[in-house]
Structure formats: C-alpha cells, structure tokens
Length: 233
Length: 233
DNA sequence: AAGGCAAAAAGTGCATGCACTTGCCTTGGG
DNA sequence: CCCAAGGCAAGTGCATGCACTTTTTGCCTT
Image (cartoon, rainbow over all chains, first blue to last red; front, side):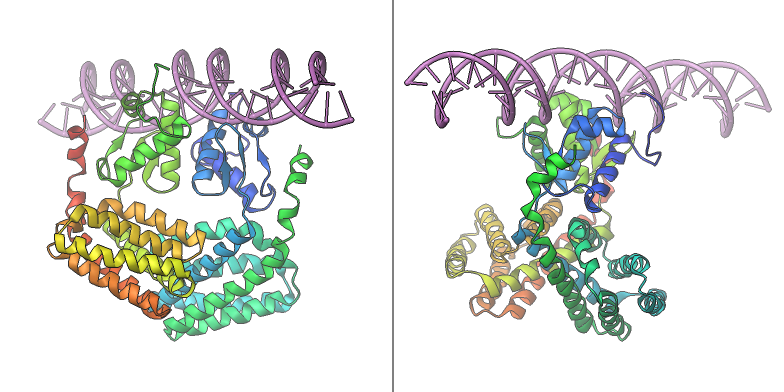
C-alpha cells in the first residue's frame, strides 16, 4: 500500500473503517439515506475496497447502515415510527440502568456520580453547551456502568449510538441545560437514597422529554434524503 | 465457482454464511471457544474465504463470535458473569415486551395468543418436548411482536439468539413443560386483563427461572473448550 | 412525443494472491 | 537440562481482478 494510514489508531484497517464510518454517521456528517459507495469510501480513506466492504457489513449488522444485495449501502434511514420505537426503548433501557444503579452502585460510584453532577451545575450557570454535553454523556455512561450488567450496558450504548444523529436537534432548545440538570438531579437523588423505582421513573421521564424535543426536528429530516445524495459528491 | 451452493437460499453468499455459521452456533453444533478457521469454513461450504471473512466480521459485530486481530476468530465464549448479565437483561426485556403487550396488543393478537396458549396445554399432557419447544418460541415471539416496538423486538430477538446455546440445557429438567405452561398462563392472564405490571412481573419471573435452570448446566461447559477443537475435524 | 428495448456504464460480490503477523519448533549456548 | 534466539509453518489481512447484477442512456418504434 502507499504508506501511512490517515487514522493511525489501533486495530486492523477494517476496524478503523468501522469506527471512521460509524463516527461520521453518529456525528451526522453522513446523513440517513445517503449513499455509501465502496469505491469512493476506499479512495477517501486510501485503502482498498475490501476493508470498506467489511466495515459496511459490520455496520449493517448493528443497524447503522442498510445494505441491499447488489444495490449498495446507504446510511440507515429510520422511519418516524422506528425512531419513536428507539426512543421508547432507550427510555426503558435507561430506566433499567437507573433502577439497577440505585440498587447496585458501589459507594465510590455513588460519590463520584453525585460529585460530578453537582460540579456540572456550574456549567449550566455558564451556559457552556459544549462542556455540558460532554458531561451529560459521561453522566449517562455512569448510569450504564453503575447497573453492573455488561449486556444491558452494550444494548444501551448501541441504542444510544443509533439515536445520536437525531439527538443533536435538542441542542437548539432554549433552557435545555437547566431542565436537563434538574432531571438528572431527580435521578441522582433517587439513586443516592437507593430508591430503585423512583430512579427508574426519573430516568424514563428524562429520556421521554429528550425524545419529544428531538421528534420535532427529526420530522423535518426524512423530507430531504434524495437531496443529500447529490449534495455530497 | 464450482457450481451450486449447498445452501440454496436467498441473499448473497456472505449472508448465507452468516446464517449458516450463526445457526451452527445457536444450535450448539459449534461450541463456545471453538476455533473458526477461515480456510476450513470456506472449504466446508465450498466458497472462498472472502464471504467467510465478511460473515465472521458481522457475527463478531453482533457478539456471536470473538475476533482477535491477526489471531483468528472463535465462537464467543461467555463468562459465567456475562451469561448471568444476559439472562438478567433478557428477563427485563421480556418484562418490557409483556408490559407493552398488555397495553397495546390488538384484539386479534390477544385472541390468537390465548387460543394458541390453550392449545399448547395438550402438548404438555402429551409430553411432546419438540412440539412444545416450537410453540414456546412462537409464544415468546408473539409477546415481542405484541409490544409494537420494532427496536425492542430487535434487541430481544438478538439477545435471545445469544442465549440460545445455553438454554438447551433446561430441556433435561423433569416437569419443565408443565411449569413453563403455568408461567405462560400467568403472563397470558395478565395480558388479557390488561394488567401491564402483572404481565411484566410474570414474564420476568418466567425468564429468571429458566435462567437458574440453565446456569447449572452452563457452569460445566467452560471446562471443555479445548477438547471440542480436535473433536470437530 | 412517449414508450420500450438494448447496450453500455457503474457498482457490487467473490476469488485469488501475496505480504505480514503469530505461534511453534528447532537449535545452539549456558 | 533449561532457556533464548532464530527460523518455519499456519493463518490472517488487504489488494486486485473479473464476473455478474443493476441502472442508465440513447436509439428506435409506434
């Protein structure tokens, strides 16, 4: 091959391609419905089609892309209905994690959850969107880990990835940070006092609200999948 | 290529390989920890290594096989702990499906659930293990569909597949059929009267019991992965 | 002008070859 | 006899080529 790889990171080339493409989908750089041409991707990343093909296969296995035999791959396009089902699932999964966390988190986990949560209050005051988003991700990850169930952790993380492209929307809502923090607060409080049922309910409600916020924006998306095709080349 | 494929079914060769290998794993013909040699599999199915590689990649993406870079693939070996986490997840997922089913099943769905369930009582009396197993699978599928949530459906089905190799164990338990039917009965009754909470609890308990039964047998499995290797060629 | 057909273009799917990595085994030294 | 280093065999990872499928385009017919 020609020389160094653009992404120097670990694993085989195919693995790197999985991460690279998944990343572009999750961050919204590649839009739902957009065509994923093997040759173009291969050229774009300076590898042969083989690792690209493998990556597309794996991504289709986890549902991030859709593959029609002999007809190429596209970024998975989710119907309004499927999107709703994913958000609903996410709410249930988060509820499970919160419930388990309330019952199972170690002392250290509880303490650092609370500490970080309190620290994030400052980000809300400052209106630091970016930083808060980073914290928010970490907060939810703590819940997933706190459930002490690796499989639920996997399911939740995967679902979260698939929802990521549609959650960016909520960024724009005014007062989101304060509201989010208050909802987190309900979850943290419930967990700290070991109230599994309350923690579950609070987590479910939290996601549901995000869901409704996103749905508004998502509704506009499916309108323009045809456009994005030509727009990208 | 040489001619007809041994598996004549739909899709690309790679897809067929995914199904073929997954099937052998799920049915226990390939045991956890067993080596998956690309060349051997290719020869076994009379295809080149390429579709086999793609299949292994996809199966590893969904967690059915484990792939170490440059070191080959093996049937995913689940630790006792991870197995427990999967069963626990399964219980929660089934609980969700049952809850949703209680709230959302259409009249037709409720009727056929009840009808089929009652019909299966006869299989219990006859001690028809095989037939009951088929019915059992269908019964659970009805719950997954009845939840009217495609994503939960996916998650549940996938998790169920990954657990399949470990659930065969329970076959051997005496009185299993009658017990299973009674547990199903609790679920059906709760769903028929629209009692979501009760349906959820009944479904969770149902899986938990299966889980405990399987755990006994699963414990013995990790002892002999080295043997199975030579045994297979 | 619209519809249909055919040939070409584009793009996917699989096979094969070669480079490289890993694990094992041999061989020589302590 | 044990250990280290080097070499060998097995097997993975990627690139490339070709066959086949789908899609497009341009021409002909009506």
